Length: 439
Image (tube, rainbow, N blue to C red):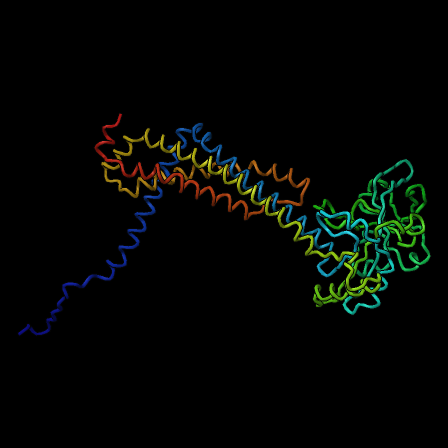
């Protein structure tokens, strides 16, 4: 019988204080953080003690990171330039021309085709239910003069007044020519940005008279600046002069020239279906029977994409291969130096293990050192890549993306981990007694 008022509490032998359970994890986490901090500080001291050797070790990584950033910048620049050119072509525009886009092996069959004529634009626009507008384009090359300023090899492009219904026309100042200019074959011109800038460095070009191949033209507009191009559509650009189609026809003639007919497909229409329908219209217009092959080509944006795809793949493959080779050489250099570092610090490793350092602590220390060496190389590589990117931007619309920088540092961490693992493992497996005996 228990004394009155006394409560006896019995504890189960397996019972454990909840506070103790919850306190174990923070203690373990704190210990891991302290080990990481200690490994980081030891690695910094080791790198600081061998500054020149550490810098020379990073050369391979620096070259590898330069290769990564340069390759990514070039590829992105080509991609951006290509997409800019594709946007000028238009995803919903069909190009009726004599020649197909891209490489042609049996060119003799194409050169014997009859030229495309401007009347096909009227036929397609009138008969096709998928065409919202059709326009004819023709070109030649001439010199252009204003006072003492001369510019040679300028593309002179003849355009119908409805050209703006097929392609976007961006005018910086003045106006595009109207239907009246086209019908009456007026001698008026719209200058590309570079042409206007070089002919009129200190004057306003609007209202001035220029000479194209010796003939006088009144300037009525200036196109907006487009910048460098990676290829593609050259109808509108900085180094072109646009004049009415009828004016071009009157002065230069179109009988023996290749005319390009552009067809704008109506919104939400299937371009492939529109292409089939226009093919039938053109065959009838050109008097072809069922047994005859097409004597014209209908080009579109996807045609050019298909032609460019193998080239882009080749560029990517070469770039990735060179980058991988550079990083492999850099990684081997890091691994080699880390093996030397482990050998030199064998006695230090023995002392640490003799005083209670665990396998994981030694492994972490040397891995951190390898990652730090690679990261230093990554920082230097990214800094050096800035002038490289600026040089590339002079040719391509390129930029150093933050994503590329992030990928570069991730690569540095991976290289440090992969190529530093073997030396770190060797250090962590050292026997304390043997390590202490090492001289």
